[in-house]
Length: 527
Image (cartoon, helix red, strand yellow):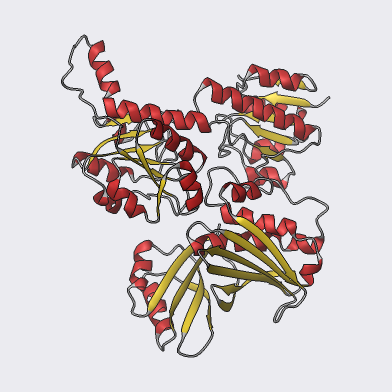
């Protein structure tokens, strides 16, 4: 009988479920040293957020097959170390979406009606009805940044209060927004200028870090109120504090912070701020739901059954070796497409050319979808849920194949279509070592290896453009590791792709955009 260590408290019903088929030790008072000594005896480990399952613990876990995280984030688990050991890491990504939406509404109402200060005043035996005048939600504009699962729930609840809901999410279709009765705007600025309240519901990525900063606050209505129950760092806390002190922002409600625990954050003591210690998932129902979900999935994993929420799900063993070798490239092509389209697509088409067309390529399509959604959704994306995200967003996915290819033995093309416009990326493997190459970007042929930091520039094909762009990068101590240029005809338009050693700051990209005849600039962090 397999043994399971439950290191932190989960729902009793979850433990009872596990005890039907397994030996379960519920030991919440283990020290780290105790854990390192005993973990070798267990096939499964279940934790919440307090237990650090790092490489040392994983190395000591000689029999471990699965680690279950009763919640969403897996920051406390060394997923890479677990993957190297062949240990499955599972989470419960949908366990807290209702509680997070309700926490948003709780903070929204508390912010409008000055509930914390009024309660505190009355506890001091002060009957003051004039100092806590609030505002109504009715007929106000709620601006939701990020219309995923939680953002959608918040939108529905705001509508029940008679609010007009405006949303910005470049990866959501207009059809979905119409079904929700939400007004979808194409630019964040359009939301900022009309919202009375702004609530963010986004994953934290390099693209969303400090999404609301000094410039964005300047564009907002005077007296706007801000909420964040998503991820710390999406709002620039220093810029928010300045906006509060200037009365640009009338109030803020924060459940998450850039650095946690946030006991030293100046905002938590600000008189216009309601702050809670990351309670978005802290309801009895969410905790119970997470415990039951993780218990069900750990049991399924130990029995060899299907498990939908595997964070480090690997390619099935039966996948053809030729196809398997293209998996990482397909994933990178999907991620590259995300950066280039910068928004929702109506459809994604995967085209397989050459000898690859004779193989079953469905898993490559899933890999490309996994890459496409990697930076868009809250939950970790894997080979099971990636197609579900496409379906949820109304994205039609299509495969085409042809044994005919002009320049390469094998070629994968990934196309994103929106309003009859198309952005295409293509890639292949070359040489005996199967080196990855991006060979098509936009509508141009190019030959560039993927790297962590890349940039693409579209410009009029006139003399001196390469030198101007290179000089700007050099002036800012940004080294170009590799560069390739693609064009269709002399004097037309060209695209330049580069690999760089360090990230290119926004202000440097803006300087390049100001160069005459530069039409488009994109800096991309692939991983």
